[in-house]
Length: 406
Ligand SMILES: C[C@H](O)[C@@H](O)[C@@H](O)[C@H](O)C(=O)O
Ligand SMILES: [Mg+2]
Image 1 (cartoon, rainbow, N blue to C red):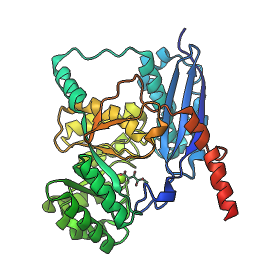
Image 2 (image 1 turned 90 degrees about the vertical axis):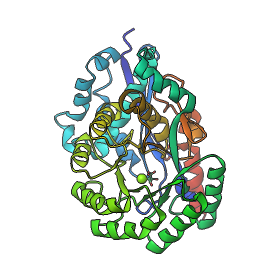
Image 3 (image 1 turned 120 degrees about the vertical axis):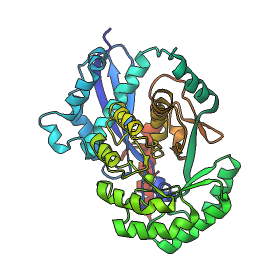
Image 4 (image 1 turned 90 degrees about the horizontal axis):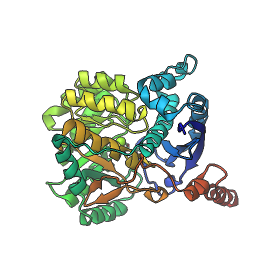
């Protein structure tokens, strides 16, 4: 058997996280964590699972884009794909007609990520992975197996959470061994001051605080707003302004450096070319790769190598639905094969929706423990997919009925 791809299906799967304000921030006030979920079937029965993350409406557009790319995958053998993976990547991103939709940005690139994530999953399941015998790689690998990769939590302080909930979640997280916390900011300065003060008081001076504005400000506004929050000693301000404004980020970085605050960005950084310029312009101090925004493992590896060259730490964006499951592979690769450093490095963790995965992430003592099952860890439980498929799944039918009653 050639492991030839015989079909590629994609489904629109959405979770009603907005009901309880999970995932809310200054720009995305009612996110329903969602995925365009891809399954690749091969002639030998082996399957590959992939997804890209979205926040609700519009997932159907990503689904259509995946459908449009499917013809480039179906009929190919896995061998044909991986023996020239660069060529295959270019086939998906450089189709003479479809590249007009990007190139390598927006909906079409999210779709590319979903497809390629499934191809990587298929490849990983097909191969018996050979552990690196080389003693340099061996050491970091053993360390990861024993201790795991350090994580930080964003789950305590979504923007829509009331103070009481924030306090409770923070207390629980501290008890659970968490030492690094991210707080959403950017909608109202007085609220931010109150919430940051509360969290800083609870976590004490030695734990780490990060703040995230999700692109809410102009450049000057970002500098003055964050300066007002500097007394709470955040390690970074994340996405202070438009994700495309490289020189704006450089100006913010320069202005905040004397306050000891770095700039982090990447969850909406369109592609490796943008990352290259961010790095060249000293516009970020923390690289936040994203497993679904960039073109899967292929493009993320390019960014990891560039970050290493520029000596900028990588702290991946995760959370959403399935992002933790995916990105743990990338950050482990970064540590074992590229950076071998944990200095200023940590991977985001968000405590939602893991129960819908066949092999959910394992967190121990605020660390990601290396996944043991073959593949890219984003196979969802079929029962969850069916229940949450939009709009026909039971979860959505029930929601719709409730809305029509009200
Ligand atoms: C809408 C989402 O929850 C975002 O708020 C989230 O990705 C966030 O920016 C993060 O850094 O985790
Ligand atoms: Mg963010």
